[in-house]
Length: 463
Image 1: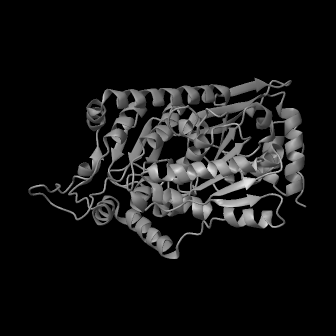
Image 2: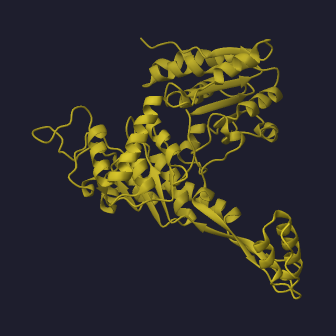
Image 3: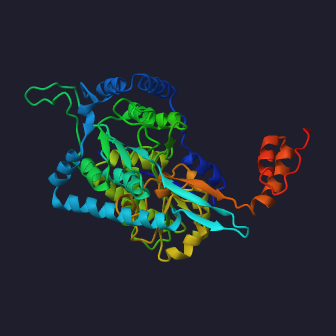
């Protein structure tokens, strides 16, 4: 029997609303101490033993026995073969998704990702040089499920940014007991490769790929091994071990973000089909039990209708148990005094996905400041953003949309300042710099500027 789903009903008119909302939003990001220690041990081992350690942990955690790293590396031929093996409809969906994501990120690059310079009045050239990272690592989850969409969202903007090498790691665990051959068994190096993921790698332009995962994969990308090249940045989601490893290697390499559970917040004015809104809440709840789905609406009767649709639709869902637990533990249907108040609460929550399911979404959009992605109008389901709308689906979670942004081309570029001072410009600038440097007690700084002045003053005495 399917478990019932009863999201918490709240009203902003209640005296304890703020405290109740805070309790519902609370999610502890503190990593389990045992996980932290295990991850630290794995990273230290990978750093010390390289390929040997990676193969050992891949055998231990994924059941994939390999005599060499070559057995764990995927090739461009593997990608092409996987792509060709798919039904025409899946090939077309992958290509169209990647094309839309590429088009959006090319527009993003053109808008703000180019080198620029200007000359000021004394002939000094100032500007910014934008260059891509040389090599990035893309982590694609492959334990409980496969996510070709995640691969596209990470690899395509890196490709658009001009990254020359995109290294993918994806776990392909052997399900059940590890077999080494025989009738009906798996060969020692045969894990569960997902053809959609390999085909997506073909479409998105992945350079190299390895069938490894977990903290050992993050360590291999961060430190480099005999076989796996050291990258400049690691992006992509993973489990608690992956998140912990990314946190620990930050500084050695760049990372995109430490993502929390998936979230959706729907602002509804009561004009959208309650069936649509209930299914949109399900679309995040089905990710895992910690996912959060919240509906804000000023119409109490509409909240009742959405709850009725939740009751009706839940038994039809293959992941009904996960959805029910997510909605029961972290979901909420919130009655607000107005749509304006709903927008204010949304800004306080700063959700990952924000749907404005309204007849006039453009009326409310100017009031919304903090969200990973904003989906305007009843027809703009969050799931379209996950797969094919174009903007990136790697978004800030757990309220971090207040100060961070979606993954994009800019995450795979870096900026270098450009300065070329003319002889004329060195005169006023040198005097300013020298005065400030003497004030800081940095005489060599001051003298370096003064030596370029037309009339070089005597060096000041130490203060």
